[in-house]
Image 1 (tube, rainbow, N blue to C red):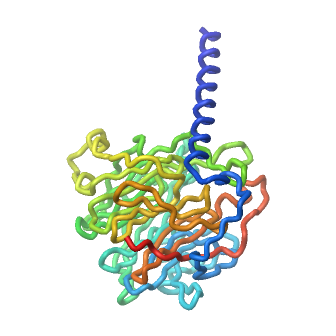
Image 2 (image 1 turned 90 degrees about the vertical axis):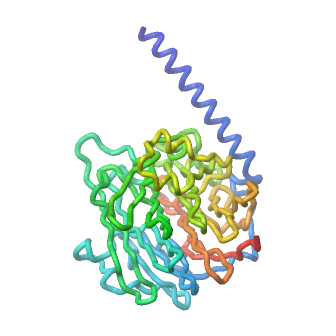
Image 3 (image 1 turned 45 degrees about the vertical axis):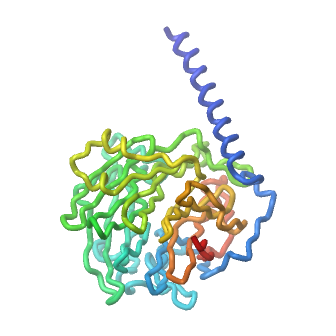
Length: 390
């Protein structure tokens, strides 16, 4: 029995290896040439720098109807200054005030680790302050078997007309031992928030009236990373010192402007998925039935952030070939801009000025993925590019 087990194990490992090679070849074929090894310097005059941020890594980006630009920063200790800012004359200023950006104090009244931003259809700014539990981050969310520490999550609603806080949601019914809330979108028609939870490979639906949550589509093919999709940059696989590859379950999400569909995908998966919000709002649907309503939109790219515009285009950051792409309503994938400066393009905001704004996190350049060497190209920047006309 032991001999047969070892033989089967070797065969399974060989099959997995072959599958991984085939996936890598598929990615290379799907991407433009030189996508995995940056031997070509891409440049686009369409790419415009909005702000330079020094050594402060920006993550969340959102834009109001009158083109106020908001940018958030994760708390990484060194070089951290503010969690949430408004960019004024290319300078990040603390928002809504200094007190909420204080480095110490009551965690209920200050930002701990601002992850995502979203300006809704009614021009309210929503701020996801999300500190996942250890081992429950975007890197897979395996958790711990011995009473892991809890994460800390809150979602803030800010009135941009008065720059005042209106409500805070604290996710009291959420499993904070394993959760890793990452991106969120607000459905003003149904009074719901949709959040990605890569820590548990699920979506979370938050009722904005009651504050109650439901965890849906957990560990489904549409929310779970493909272990055979390994991110590769400049000819180097993105692995830590122990050889473990970067891996994220469901991460970026987008809500169409008519609030009809939520689009979502894991980083480590090429396929893009969507589901009608009517199904997400239906509390009577168990996960198997809900999963039957998920639509596979086909292969796209390795993606970190998503957003929808008024024309029904779904924009996707595409880090492996240094580009921003968009999935048009006719099902076609287009490249909006490609430039070597697009190092891990991350979060999006859309202005009424006709521009797409986004951050570049450069995560693949961090020491943890480069044998301790810091390969980040400073300064971090916020960019914008003109939206397609249709």
